[in-house]
Amino acid sequence: MAAAVEKTSILDESMSDVFDWSDSKLPVRDAIWNHFMDDDNHDTTKTSDEVAPYMSMDEGKLKDAVEKLLKA
Image 1 (spheres, rainbow, N blue to C red):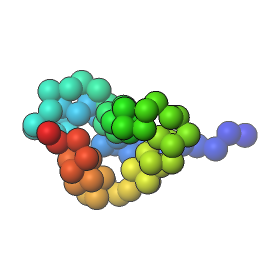
Image 2 (cartoon, rainbow, N blue to C red; image 1 turned 180 degrees about the horizontal axis):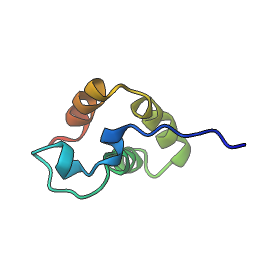
Image 3 (cartoon, one colour; image 1 turned 90 degrees about the horizontal axis):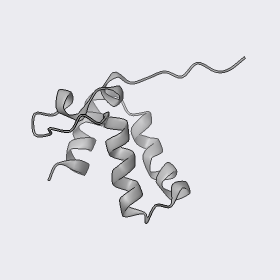
Image 4 (spheres, rainbow, N blue to C red; image 1 turned 180 degrees about the vertical axis):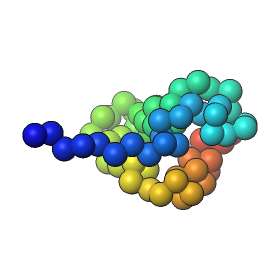
């Protein structure tokens, strides 16, 4: 039996729905992934390690962390 995956609602919403400063329709989880992939020279293993903490953050901390990470 496969384990159920719990989704954090902010991760599954589009960037523009969560952040008023973004016009991106990408889900937040994809925006985080893309940011680290670009920074890590497309090293999937390194990116996976860096993205992992964001996947388990509570929503309040997650929103603040993503804003610090991605807001230009």
